Image (cartoon, rainbow, N blue to C red):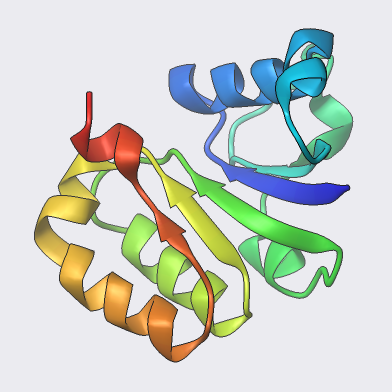
Amino acid sequence: MKKIAVLGFGTVGSGVVEIISGNSFKDKAGEGLCVKAILDIRDFSQSPFSNLIVSDFDKILTDNEIDIVVETIGGINPALEFTEKAFKAKKNVVTSNKELVATKGAQLIRTARENAVAYLFEASVGG
């Protein structure tokens, strides 16, 4: 089972968490996925996922169980910094961040290749 971290718990991030945590997704996914951590600085103590919320990105970087980082923060910073650090920590990154892909995509693709990880962004450019 692949373990993921979601950066941002707004509309997109919370939607990703709910879909991955749902039974219908588990039935359709070839390989199992589970959310191990959610990065956000806001208080989500009432959320059913509150036990997964972390405010320190380094906890995600140093967690060897996390295979994939899903970046849903938006904008350039801190998304660029977090994405580059994730690559260097040998974590694959999936993003929905149109601005980041449009302005820094070529640079990030190179960095991903240099670190032998994947950078996936179809949702950012395909629809």
